[in-house]
Image 1 (cartoon, helix red, strand yellow):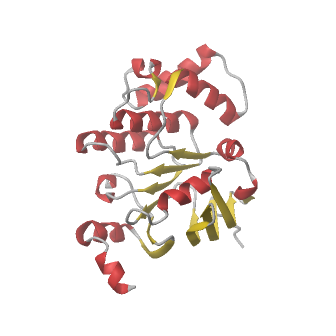
Image 2: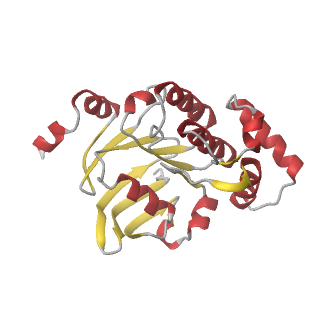
Image 3: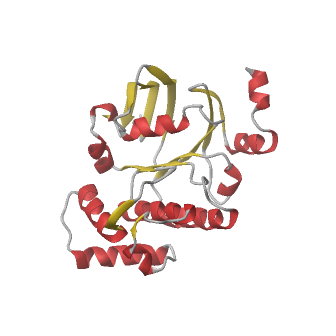
Length: 249
């Protein structure tokens, strides 16, 4: 008998903002190395789900959420991050006066539970930046300070590359990015991702992810998963929109 455990297992997960239920009983499983997409129109509950899993205090979650067999909902946000859970925000905040390099060194120490000297970390950072074909001067800039949409997304991908999460959740990596920049970001994501890193992405435009194998696609509406399938479902939505799902319901 082979014993198997999903990296992330959700069963009847509900999410509330104040007294309003915004995610209404989500169940899914993600294995190490898999890529899962969440699609749906605005207000479907997609971003709320990711924020709740990351431990954002505004979102109260109930139900079953296991991360590598551990009760995710019992962990504080920083404990979830240390376990290897990563969230790339749709609209990352600017942090004036804190360079990307300094921010990432402190995040790296917290993630792996060990102190590391500036010189040691610089070697790691430069290696990751070479991997992503990034100009080293980028790391000297203030975190997201005055960044364009594309620069913010590249900053998030660099964080992913340095912190090496086990599950990376990306909230609309295509938001606020032009087509050319988006192609570069998808290429960077492919380079930054470790073989065993699972991805859970919210997106409106699955066509930009053609270079990445998609294992599962979910469509959310009204806080629930109303359709699921393989990558062909994403293509059908690209071609026909969501009206056929509404008719089926």
